[in-house]
Length: 185
Image 1 (tube, rainbow, N blue to C red):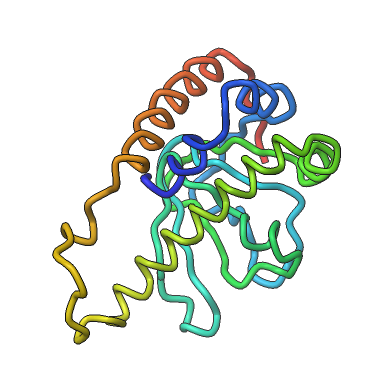
Image 2: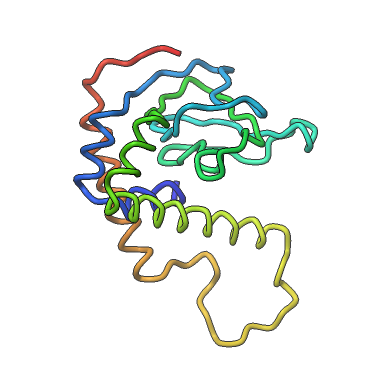
């Protein structure tokens, strides 16, 4: 969930209000494919409830990640406009918040302040993912540390502030969406 919270922690309250106004929540049944590898997607998703499995054909369709509440999905294809490189499938009944690519592209083109926050949030989100991936692959393990540092899982004070604020925003967003109508996919 921490990765998704980076995203919400960097956006401001007005950004979140805009997202709530243009987005929609959807219930996703167990087994439903949210994103199909190699198939264009027209939205960015925020996981609101439950879990999704991520797999890739190149890796024998084995699960390579599990996405839970607060995670952002579809961000890589949004950034580089390429087809998804993995499949994302609901492993239990789930709920997502859907943000239309078209609405998002228009907002980014017309609101430079929102665009700066949005792309900063994506950069932090993707940087964290890259650090975790390289750490899991063992890169840098044999190199001595240049200085005394905290455990690599510890967060800097800035990141702690983002995560705290994002947690508050996610709770607020979930309360706002609780009574909103759901759309089935």
